[in-house]
Picture 1: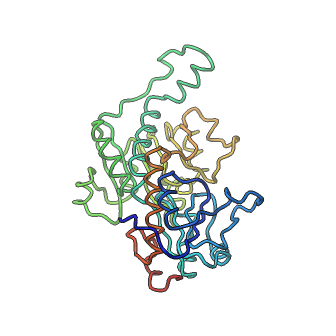
Picture 2: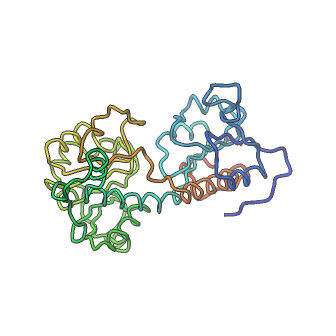
Picture 3: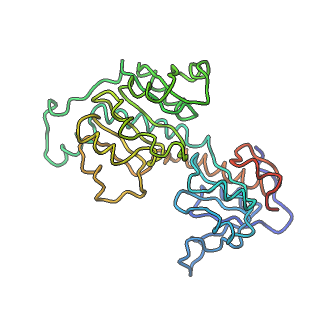
Length: 334
């Protein structure tokens, strides 16, 4: 996509929640004035300046709904960095004539690598080993026996960008990879490195490791509950670096405490941020991290550059490929 030349007209105003990569800020600065709460020195309003914004580049922590779109009456486009945009109501944005963008390609490599890291930590009890070694000193290896990934079956719920890259790395570890995804064919799954199974129950019952790579939607909220966890092999493990509410937290806690699951690796929580007294943090068979799967220098830069470039495209009346709500285009705010 073109980064474009500076606009001759008065600059647009683009609101942002936090700092962007310097190169992304430089791209925006050629055509826009950057505004937002970090530049509002005398305001505690988390949306300070949004009334003046033509575009907004946002993260995960503010809920973008009809009330906020109404307050931001000049807003034409809101761009959510990363692939998930569940804190931005696409339906309410569409009703208000606001384009919604995300940066779906940016977090693929970072999140896939992190998923593999979580899998390895679970298999080798690495988090538990480190905690005990630091607290107790040398610990016998007999107390920390894990399992090899080679020869095990990895079940991927979702075979999009991230799931496909996870499959590629897992196959290099000599794992068997299966997947379920209702919108792809068996031929497409094979091309993405996985054997397609017909449905989620089939995936759960056949997998030693289950990894979730699904968006949070009304259909996927609570998708993994008591029934689904009972279908998994006793002693299997679960990885969730997608969205916390996809998994019923109470059901997962019970499965971990009962031994139905040998372990879980959780990078996402319900709710977020997770508090220090969260019961999962007290379990030795849980690998826990604070929603950092996409947090790499490279991933952040990819996301911010894509956000800057595509936000400006909309403001120039150019339609980007990453338009989440394409139905708004012909009746968008101008």
